Length: 521
Image (cartoon, rainbow, N blue to C red; front, side):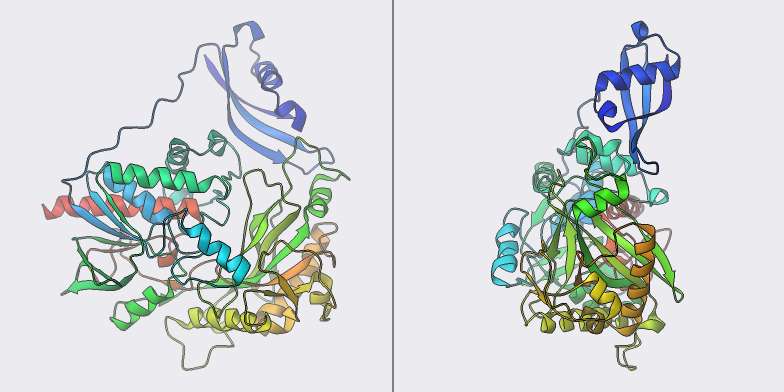
């Protein structure tokens, strides 16, 4: 017999399998001498009381539980019908793997380099302030998530099977803990090997992966997608094209607009990265002077309505590093990441304002079309680049100075590798953003003791939280509303907001591609 019980233990107790077994057996009313197996199904930290607890959902059984079997065998699709997938991020990779399950042959085209070769280009940003527009934190094998954290938390359970995405990641080398943690996280240091294993599985099955293959045109005959053209002059043809390019691929939005293929402006968010010493966040969230060694570095999630718009934290990275995520040499963009151990001395998070089209004051009146939000992003990012000395140095201001509108004469130590420079970030940002951030930070300081402090630094800008453009698609077939066989997919198309939701969207699209091929036969 198997029973599932919920228990709450101290962090130390929760780290001991024997104590977990004993507590779960007691909760289940099962004598210890009949307990054969226990398995943790869910794990979360409850820090609401003075003494933090670890809450566990545990399966207790008096019979042996079957060990997870090997991953399913991958089809040989060398003779399968081709599917072109543009972009090798989570949407593209998981779409390719699902295509293989359907017997289809994926052809992945990635503008950037393979996951390991990207490292040299990231080092060039950090050390020399040089951005390769095709190989950076946003572009390259694995997409933006590979070198910016690998957090797997999503609320998008209605979009697909979260478990299938996590299971695949475990099959390719991720820790099984991601199946049970409330906020699963892989870590930037571990993701490259996982992404490499995925690519090797795709090519072993007969799929293709082409790097340094930036798409410059979509081949359309009548109103049907027939393939793509890459910058080296190569044509790749297939009856289905999955567009999984990510939301930083602005040239794709411009290409679609130039070809008369419908795109739409979408609401998005913009703000800053805020970094605290991790010890401040630990003290506030765990109600202690020194964090219990059995507890992970603390995180937070904050939201506040200010003048009709949401101000909220985004992509919080405990024990993390602020990353330079520009895709062009004339802009500064920040993001954040953590290694798997989350053992750096700082905690950073995006703090952003949700914006609608009517709020974009800095964009000229004539730019009211689909790219209005994209131009707004660009304007702020370029202003940050100029403020940073026309390098990848980021303009920054101490938090209290930002709130009261004061220049910071000096700045605290910061994890941002290219470095930060003192600047009035409150004046750099558009007024509709700066005013709301100022009021939001005041309220955040009331919610978390010690959050509002000049030991924290505000770093500009956090502008790539989500796509400012949507590529509309039919809700049933998932094809573009205008072009048959063209499948907008993932974050860049406006249908996802992170690794897991993008992966699920890639799977859904692959399922619909398979249906289309069966109908065409």
